[in-house]
Length: 50
Image 1 (cartoon, rainbow, N blue to C red):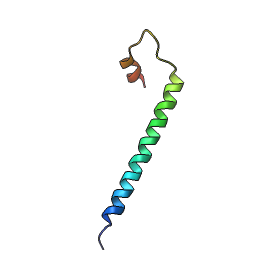
Image 2: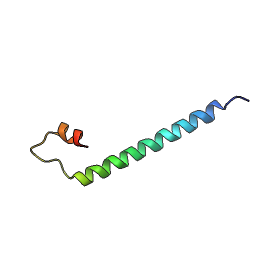
Image 3: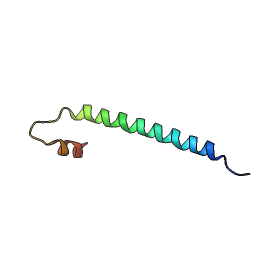
Image 4: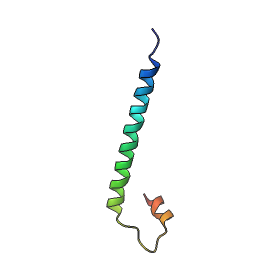
């Protein structure tokens, strides 16, 4: 009648790993679209742009 704690934990960890991988791919794609860091901008501004 109760829930399976190990199954719930496994489900949560699996979803977090998938979300992490997806966020990394989106970030890398956006970096490619934006292009290299311009020399007149600081890295903090570049990170804020992304």
